[in-house]
Image 1 (cartoon, rainbow, N blue to C red):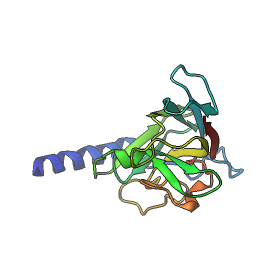
Image 2: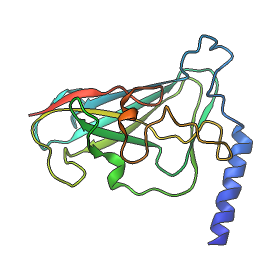
Image 3: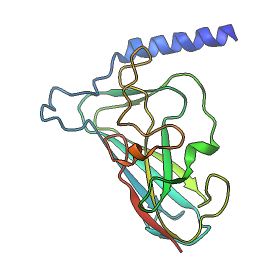
Image 4: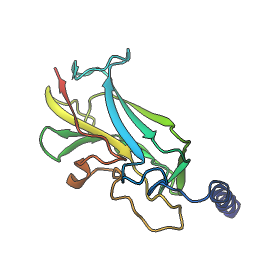
Length: 191
């Protein structure tokens, strides 16, 4: 166990030494205050068709796309192994009926995610339209969003600065506002 902890610490130290600190806050070429990242969400069927209406019980493919729009490598740090999350809320409310991370387990150690200049990374989850208790959602309209659950942009030795990130676990009402790390709410219908 001690060997595993020491090995993890050595890997983390080497990662920080190789990558250096993140420059996520503002790039030299981004003096206008524009975001470093752009985050979007699409809903698809299993054939890859982008849809907003799904037959009850059919798989909904959620795709979170995060684009580093800067000319520098960016590293984001996470408090656990959870690096992204998706949540479905009742239309017009902050009531979460499903979030992807509720059925997952994650490592309790810091992790990181690195984006090369102008790189796009996509995170995909297949959702069976069941709520967090496993019950099939009723027909009707819902909203979904997704985002990165980063802890900070500086590394494991820096204070938390994740107010723009998606919440690990069940999101709060404040998390419904889009940021450079969270997508907008996307309306969809279950028929």
